[in-house]
Image 1 (cartoon, rainbow, N blue to C red):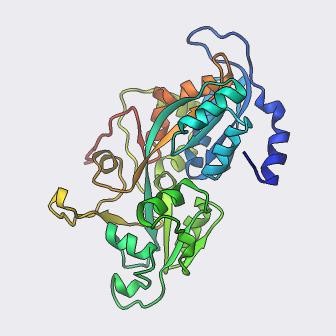
Image 2: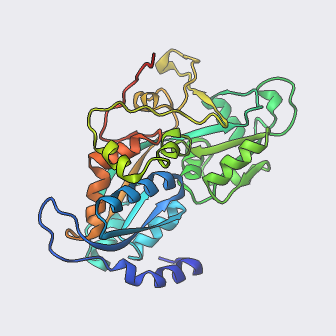
Image 3: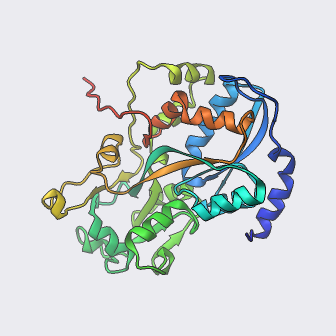
Amino acid sequence: MKLNTTFQIMLSALIVLGAVSCTKVKRGEYAKGSATIFCDDGFRNILNEEIEVFEFSYPESSIIPFFVSEQDAIDTMMSDGTQAIIVTQELTKEQKDYIKSKFKRVVKTHCIAVDAVALITNKGNRVTSLSMKEIGDILNGRITRWSQLAGNDTTFIKLVFDNAGSSTVSYMREKFLPEGSKISDNPHAYAQKDNAQVFDVVQKDPDALGIISVSWLGDDLSLAKKVPVEQRNKDYANQNDTIATNLTTEVNVVRVSNPTEANDFDPTGYKPYQVYINSGEYPLFRKVYMISTASNSTVLHSFYTFVTGFVGQKIISKTGILPYHMNPRVVELK
């Protein structure tokens, strides 16, 4: 497995951190020590909050995150440079067998969330709804100007996405493009470093159409950061409260419709709210997996247990995406 030079240097520097605690831990207890996790950048907000609450709850534990492309995360695990990753695809049987034979590790995989890919436009843009066919036509270069969608604006659609190795780009490529094609083949497509830059470009440019993970659009986590972590920890542990998440008002979050024979060609467009992700009415969704090769009685296994447990899933519910093990609720506020 070949890694680029930057990653070779990074992994060399992480050898010490990669060594996690092997002290015997009793059932129900959490291990102490430090370890790394590599995560697709689309889930940066989620993982940072998971780590902060985990480390507050278990102060002798430390999780060091690295936010990279999905492919880099997988490559790092395949070279045993980390024992935990968060990505949108499971490892293949061949990859699992390689890890077992080469490093004597067992791969554990847990679906932790159902994420949605959101399309966003500038607040001054009149286009607030797109069909799946229109999205495909934009990505394939058949629709190139905003005037083909709404109004008299003849400017080119600037397609803005994060780095080419991200899970978001991979998902859209596989969903809409012919095999072997890339989003970057579109002459009006512009790659950014990460999701935050995509968001910034769309905020400033009325001609931009951004492709972004919906977890970047939830208001709740940004508001949560104003609350001390001690109180947040109590709130996450509360099993009786109502969960409500709003999507940001700083950009337009595009409604997406998918008229097909199966739904009687219903033209209704949906925003990527949890309830519509759960029902499948919002069509651009994918599963998110936490994959671990860490042994029991290690800090990474403890973190794996935390993220997949009630509190970890409650944190995910605050981001706008759907936690895999909690039922979404629609609440009318009066």
